[in-house]
Image 1 (cartoon, rainbow, N blue to C red):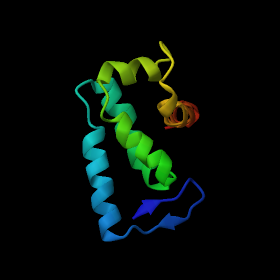
Image 2 (image 1 turned 135 degrees about the horizontal axis):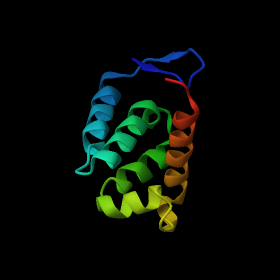
Image 3 (image 1 turned 90 degrees about the vertical axis):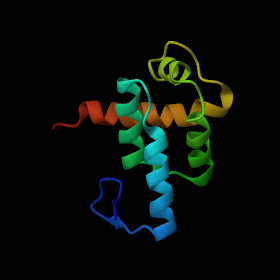
Image 4 (image 1 turned 135 degrees about the vertical axis):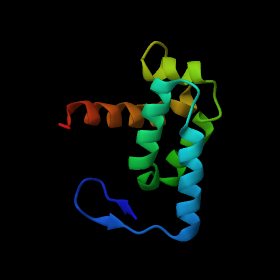
Length: 102
């Protein structure tokens, strides 16, 4: 079961969706620890809630080199146009987590 977007609701996932989500979590694990932490946390919390187009963009993002993704997430370079929205969504998510108390 995946918790909803902070509103207290729960979203039950179908078995196939749950399996797909587990695959996405596995693919979100990277060779670079900092990137691994960002992407796994994002995938756990947000991936099931994304529109299918955004899910597709996220999956394509995972096919890129770690350093390319890292530079985009650190705002060292601009993401390629097909990845602008998903990178913005990850930035928004990480910004929310930096503000939330532990």
